[in-house]
Length: 326
Image 1: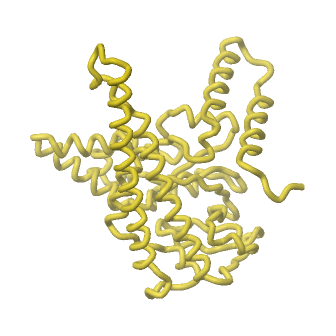
Image 2: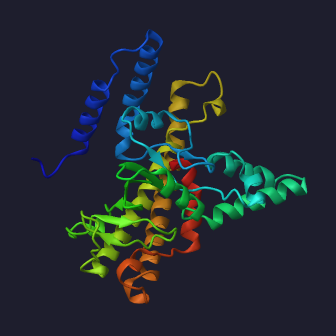
Image 3: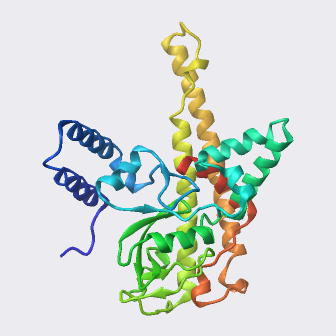
């Protein structure tokens, strides 16, 4: 009978569920393996509030590089999907991408660009073009595979653009739970159909009946606020990770505590200065996006309100930080 639940309460419920779901009649080896997985899941459960480290592979809708974070979905018995797949009929892209995960493919592109082998350079170019052409992180081949793989009425999680969305299938059509800030006051807008790669879905109520937003402009502004918040949080997470990475190999042996403290303070000051500069740049980019993509710039209403085009500079910046988030 609660209308509001805090993140801490939700984490507590999930932790209790994982403990209660422990299998009873299993072998000693299986028990030890489950307890280890349970321990790993509990250690990263708090990350659900900010972001999990998942790394897609382009060969299947349920194929991810193994990370401890994936254990959470396994223990909770929640299917995790994505739709960023290579079309097997395009041989050159299949060869260029191979069985790489996203992070591995980015490293491969960088390596191929620096190679003297023209074939490798060409392969790296094809892989880079694939990432650029599928920047929405969903392909039509992936969408077809998703529609086929998800069972009717199944509740699952869909990963796309560094976000996790609740997904289900109703009468053969995929739907995503609407959670954007812009829909906070739209009580009758619950689901959005997932039927193309551009993000132009149809909004529906809890019974999957079409329900266009009552105020498209308010919804759009809320969506833009959500995009801007996500972008700034991504930069913050990236900076936080960088601050935790101290290169101890560059610190000479035998250094005194006072000298070490001075060096660490200098490094902290340098990173703090860099952080504030990046925050200012990010804020400026946010203002540019809001000005360039305002509702008065000829946007269509209704379902097309979701479609947005961002400056290439911001897309490139997002690509830089995507490895960190993935």
